[in-house]
Image (cartoon, rainbow, N blue to C red; front, top):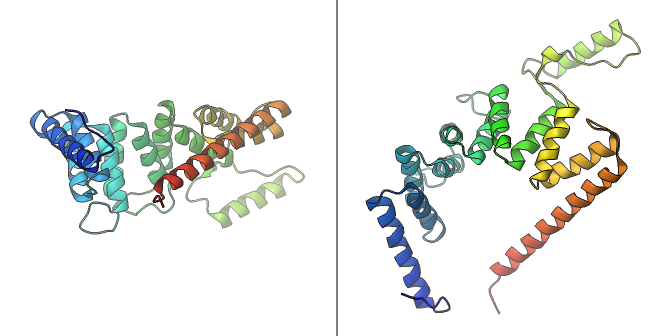
Length: 265
């Protein structure tokens, strides 16, 4: 059957039949990829977030479909499709972790970001080394955002939780007294992730290749200053220009999306 997508009636019929097709493929044929499409249909077309959440959760738990684990994790984190509007980061993490185990790069990214956060719930506990491994796995699966975060972790370094601000200041002052005139720095043992500009450059380079605008901007600065790589003004300018081009692309896309949402007069 052919549909005239300029006809409101035909569009409604098409969408209803699409829903029937997805339900059959999911519930009768038990195809995980179709169940995920059903979840997307309920979410975007029907705006029925409760039912969409149930489909995503079931598809993750029953069929081990990674993208559905990610989606239900997102729903749990935001409190979407729940009786309460309150998010549940602990439940969200459990589904992100499951999705990561099933090799979804975005699920690995979210697992890592939750565990590295200083505002992580007590029930979950902050775990930077584990977060680093999640992000590394995501980056290896070509998630540009994960590569960017790994670069940032190496740019600043991440101190162990017991190294609070007063203790850091005290340790640096003691180093300055013992070696006057020399730049004081904390021992490597003070860090969970040590500051390493060469590794920061490597992750930023991959993130930029994967079209992460912020990584390209950082790469420009690294080349300009000679941080983690030999100083190169031409490459600094090249990556600055690339970052600006990406920024322009994002602005144009946002403007286009906004214009598409306007009602015709």
